[in-house]
Length: 306
Image 1 (cartoon, helix red, strand yellow):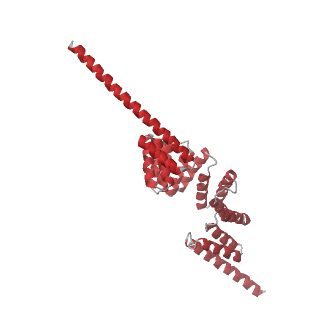
Image 2 (cartoon, rainbow, N blue to C red; image 1 turned 135 degrees about the horizontal axis):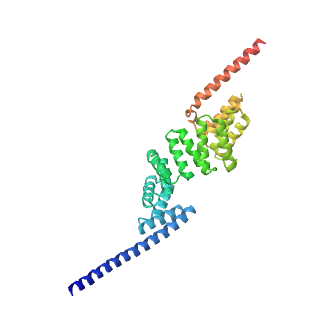
Image 3 (cartoon, rainbow, N blue to C red; image 1 turned 135 degrees about the vertical axis):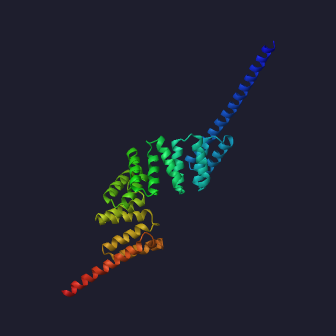
């Protein structure tokens, strides 16, 4: 009889163990469901720009279940919104780990790394995201931004083209590609890119930086009136930026309108007293003034000979 009772005891022990595991699983499932519900409420609050409420809900979700990847993701976004970058990144790292490397979370983590200057880590996340999601325009945009930050402009431009092949109307990528064309002095391609951007957004919604780049390119191809209109539009959209005023002053000097150029230069200096110290503007205006002086001297000499 002893073997019989021994078997009964073993069976009861196994059943009890299985029951405990089932109870634990039920408890964990209830916690997970509660955490997911709170996370869902957090995302609803976030989409309504109720960032304080969102942060509270995501934090509550993590108190219920610390393994809720969506709660870590949402809390990371909430913290990022109020400039708690380091803590936001730590939660996004957890979101990536707990989601087994979900490409959207990987891409977002890479973007966060890039924006705080952790370029090597951003590069790695961009490659990881590409390995699993080469059909994402956002991932290719991140890859392009990483390569541009590393000074690899041709490769960055190729990545931007891949992003635009997937999503032709992608204003952030179009503007970044335009910046590279500007650096490479490829003004025809720059204008074509900005035309597409403007067609998609409309002139009023186009970023002021795009108007500045368009003004620069128009000037370079000899379309001076259109260049001036673009730069004036940039000034109207962002009066606190000295750059379009400096570009306008330079354009007006080139056309010989010294009085109006002086006014634009004065406005630029009132907006930013140090604006001439950036990007070689002081040397640029000195060369323009020297050229004007020479031209005036030539005209004076010619009049005397008459």
